[in-house]
Length: 209
Image 1 (cartoon, helix red, strand yellow):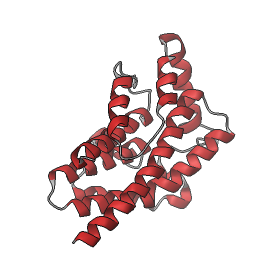
Image 2: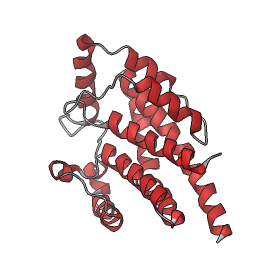
Image 3: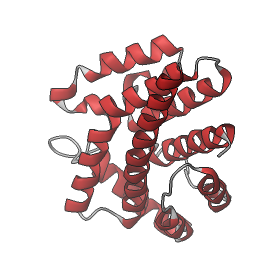
Image 4: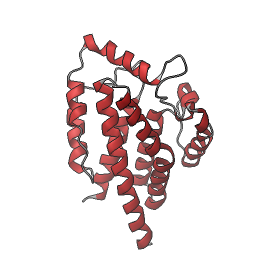
């Protein structure tokens, strides 16, 4: 498989999920060519991920039901008497407060800049996904592919895989809105498969050095 196309597909997938996990209060996150974007990604990903539920749910979105979808995002991820049922920021869990400092070190080391108005939520899931997209772009432009792949693998391992497993489990327990369930189920599957793929790739690159 063409490595540049594979990297493009992975990078595009992270950008897509970053956009979909972003707060819908700030932007209308659905874009008209979503299905075409997904089909292009599916064709060249190095593993299979079923995006059909995302396409089905986004095709159901109308001006009339969008408000309900937005409210369900808030109810899941942003508000609650004792905090949101499922924090969308990694450090919102008191036991993981130290994670934000580690995330900042990753960003600083690789030169990733969070926009000024979002620095307070630099550990938001959408930003962390965007960071992996940024690392994929860096890998495309760097002669040191291994460093960028190792960073992707380590960041996913330390900051995303267990968190997304918990998010996915809690959403099932809460019987979350089908729109968000479709997105986060596909994201969790994608992250698991991408991490396994990265582990194989980095092992192969290490052996080749």
